[in-house]
Amino acid sequence: MAIGGFVLEGEGQAMSDGLRLPRFSVGVGDRFAHQAKAQLRACMMAGDAGVQVAPVWNKSNREHVILGSEPGATRAAADRAVREMGWTGPYFVDADHIGLKTMARFLEPCDFFTIDVAEEIGRPATARDVDAFAKRHAELVGEVRIPSIAQPFRTDADFVKGVANKFLTAVQTAGLIYRAIAENKGVGRFVAEVSMDETDSPQTPVELLIILAAIADEGIPIQTIAPKFTGRFNKGVDYVGDVAQFAKEFGEDVAAIAFAVERYGLPENLKLSVHSGSDKFSIYRAIHEAVTRSGAGVHLKTAGTTWLEELIGLAEAGGGGLEIAKEVYREAYAHAEELMGPYAAVIDIDRAELPLPQVVDGWTGEQYVAALRHDRANAAYNQSFRQLLHVGFKVAAKMGERYLRALEANEAVVARNVTRNLFERHIRPVFLG
Image (cartoon, rainbow, N blue to C red; front, side):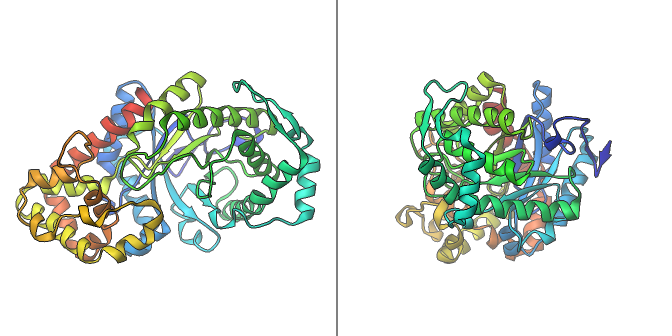
């Protein structure tokens, strides 16, 4: 049966009846709701290459507030692209990083909810709840064997209680949010993700297993979970960290999820969500190899810095498009502290590396693109320039119709960059190899 343009699956496990996220999905942002067709074209190219990748358009409450937009506009853009492109596969609109205070505006247009409980991680649970959890889950105390992980984990009651004390309040909050959404949307009419990535240290597989046991206790039929991985996931630039360690953690988390699905009755399509901040090229091979080896799924979120590809397209177009791209940088440079503030934890900008606006004003389109495009083999690539523009979308928003008209006037070159970037640099290495 179809609801809102999406397919409801038939009978499955009790916790996974209803709207179902396919094995592979890609979270894509579209700040100005003009690139849905270009993004969808990349998913269609994946289908032509032999793999189904479901698009998930995501836009956070913070981004809507900065831009003065509404979630309904994201839904309208997605629906319009699907209709005009003739897409027949599943697609979703994500209420990205919502909580109890911010979910209301997303209830009608969204069918994917990233439940963000980062603020609750580390908030102590009641001793009564911790003790009750430990008693319910005696299987987590002692030697814990997870298939596909060579060495068993050895725990004791204090360890299990310690992990429960750190995460139980967050999981209980996620349960409250899930039930509030379900009360409004209906059970089975949306995909639920729980985000656990914004914490101080990576979760071990056994810690993830404890978290998943708590989620199952809360009755949350999550289809994706975003754990914390080793390394930095800065906005719009490559992964910073030990790739081999990431590969080990990712593979072990895949194994822990498979075990939790069987042991706790979680949805059989439960998979990892990698909150990448985009462009984590150096870990894509590890993700592909792990899912290929295990048969697991993955949700790559966010893939493709669409807003930056818009700027690249405008710069390539030259003329008025290039002038707008230069103006965006000039204003972003002038208001750098204001723009960087909300994203301070996920950017590393060296102010000394930022070119002066008067220098950028003299650049050709080729020079602007070379500095902005994420190509580490190009000596002109400037990571700080890229990150400042990444968080500088507020500048374009203030331009209003002038910026949107420039996108429309240069649609062909902008769309070409958006599609090529998403397919060639994200979808292909992760899902096709």
